[in-house]
Amino acid sequence: MSHLPSFEDTTDFENADRGFLGALVPAVIRAADGRVVWDNDAYDYLEGACPDTVSPSLWRQAQLCAKQGLYEVSEGIYQVRGLDLSNMTLVEGERGVIVIDPLISTECAAAALALYREHRGERPVTGLIYTHSHGDHFGGARGVLPEGSEQGVPVIAPVGFLEHAVSENVYAGNAMTRRAMFMYGDRLPKSPEGQVSAGLGMTTSTGTVSLIPPTVDVTRTGQEETVDGVRIVFQLTPGTEAPAEMNFSFPQRRALCLAENATHNMHNILTLRGAVVRDSRIWSRYLDEAVEFFGDSYDVAFASHHWPTWGRENVVELLTQQRDLYAYMHDQTLRMLNSGLTGPELAEEMQLPPALEQAWHARGYYGSLSHNTKAIYQRYLGWFDGNPAHLWEHPPVELATRYVELAGGPEAALAKARAYATDGDLRFAATLLNHLVFADPRNDAAKEELAGVYERLGHGCENGPWRNFYLMAALELRQGPGTVELDTSTGMAAALTTEMLLDSVAVRIDGPRAWNDSLTVDLALTDEGNRHRLTLRNGALTHRATPLGTAPAVPSDLTLTLTKPQLLGLLAGQGPDGIRSEGDPAVLGRLFSYVSEPDKSFAVVTP
Image (cartoon, rainbow, N blue to C red; front, top):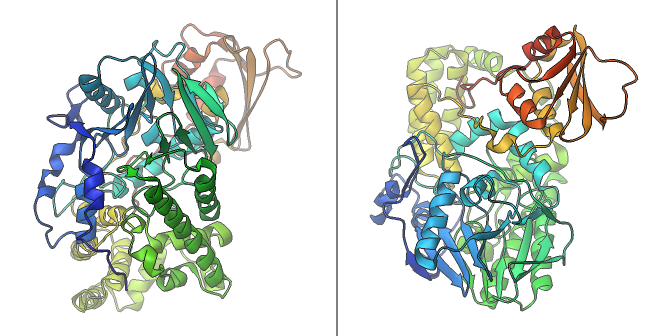
């Protein structure tokens, strides 16, 4: 049984309000076409008392995350909070201001910078830092450095940043975006019955995503850079909250940036939107290293989400408790899996030590103890639990049909499910109703019953993403699935290397349709000096690069001579106008005919 910390402790609220300079009024941000991409005023209902439809603990977290405006962290360091899922931090230098993590959307980043300038003056952006490779920490880059203004401005990121930013946001982008709709409650009303918070922040903005490639890589702990007269000392932390991530300090300002490695909640070992499973063991060790490495060089620590922590002793307590949190989850999961427990079994058994359970910042508002322990199990042992009955099970629809038949048919199964729900066993009621809906998606009575069960489960969740998943599933059962809105602008694509662009095409090749065809296309990129040989064979599109002056041993079926911007246009469907070609022009049409378009309304929870 989980026990909440004392609600009488107001330290978090005091810290969340500290240094307030001014808010964006109204807190509504629009795109150029007038579309609302962020509305923090929609959460004004949080000023009231907690209703029965929300966990009191999640309500408290939402009240903290909803605080919005410009805040002073320390002399010369400011944060804009509450204008996106993440924070944007601004560090004043000799000539201008260094921006850390420019939010998700260019519109939100521009609004945040304007709010800073309203209170601190028209300082130019003289540096840009990405703490790590997740979209909410780089997507708004063009909002602070518009096209053409980045000349001479260092863009600093941990080594491997671009590779991991692409793998998480492009290669599996359709599936991740669809899951993210559930995770952040994309279609839910902002209300006590609907979307309340994501725990890490309120929700995600929906504006224009961009990316400016890094110009300076941080490759080692202890590396120092001076930007606009500001000295920065880095700690590289790969494999923690992101595959490429870093902490860093500003010794002159006695301030420490913890990126997303230590925030005011338990984080995800495997985020519900999908990602590579994170290494909680390494995460814990880098937090421990931070305590030693940064020593007594700071009086305040801030992160890319939530509010700062003042006082070195308080920061050390935060770091050590977060360290112990990830170490405990890791080690106890390994202990139990080595005793024969499967992922679902050990998730039921896992319980935090009292000192961690009583720490507000260790609560499962974003990650959860349940799905984190399953993720650690997955990292070591994968999806298979060792039971051969689970080795070759039927897929969901076929399995569901047999379960419903076993239960005595749809009417009997529905009656039994209602009985479980009435008795308070919502978890099994959801399982049984899920089988009913998969067996017959036209069974409206089962869909409505399942929606009601999901609503009850969601309203009881302390975890923001769990709540959103349950309530989004309920909404889609009643209204039908939404569609994935992928950012197809060149803001992200223009920053990718040619190899990354070609990889993004390769993962969309419809293999079964292409496996009897064979072709080669050479792309002679004049502006980068490389020839890229594309080979389609056995349903797989592979590619390799050679210097442009190297003659190919075997001629290609088609050679296109072009620039990278022309390649971007070609991949965006603009056609080959202005591109010089040699060989069979029909080959390009054959290749593109195998490139599939993602299904923008595929189901995650409902068939």
